Image (cartoon, rainbow, N blue to C red; front, side, top):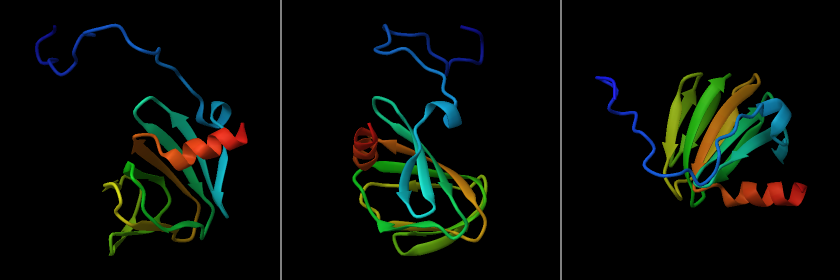
Length: 133
């Protein structure tokens, strides 16, 4: 291996599945999560990436779940409450949400584009995908 690239391992075994390229807008189904709130989930074996859009003023009510979540703001601004602490988040801000920590999110005015990564895949989103068929 080239000097300085030790982080990049060679495959130790055969992959269980092939990789895949997707177009978020064209290949991923849109799921309505609530008024003005939609998700386009990309499901893997051990994680789920959810590309989330908030219309102005939309939000997710206070909730908690067993899946660990990485929340990343890509466009717009949101106010988030995480376990009783509130912050305004802007593009480039990220939040690590451990299992069962209550949290809520609301767009601060304009539209918002945000990425969630959940591990294991969020059961509630898998059920919505299954129901949509």
